[in-house]
Amino acid sequence: MFVPKKIEFKISEIKRKTGIDCCAYGCKLKPNEKKVGLCHKHYAIYRRIKDPVYDRYANFKGNAKRRGKDFTITLHEFREFCLKNDYIVKKGNRGRNCSVDRIDNNEGYHIWNIQILTMHRNLEKYHKIDKL
Image (tube, rainbow, N blue to C red; front, side, top):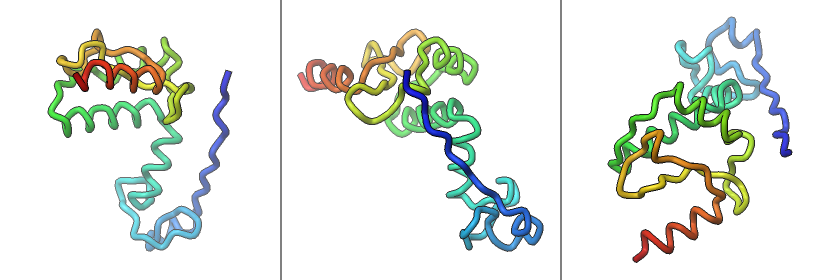
């Protein structure tokens, strides 16, 4: 089983107290008060490390909206789906890594219409069905 490497994220307490710069070491961007004293860039990294399931959920939801697809999956349903299929550990951008696929491409993102496929199989399905 693949075990992801642990990403270390260091926050400077001195920079946090001053509030002038982002709290991440070496960053000079302006911090956002709502984002734990981090700039937008470092907050995205922090959020990805802290809760990867929510990050993927927000990504899917945004992509569905951008593409004009229905999206009715709740965060709780997506968490259960990820836990059942071990999706967060297996996800990625290479051929044997997992991706979320819509079973019926004419429908939107609904919990009954998604499945886990490898990137290779998902691409094969795209070229067989969608390119007709």
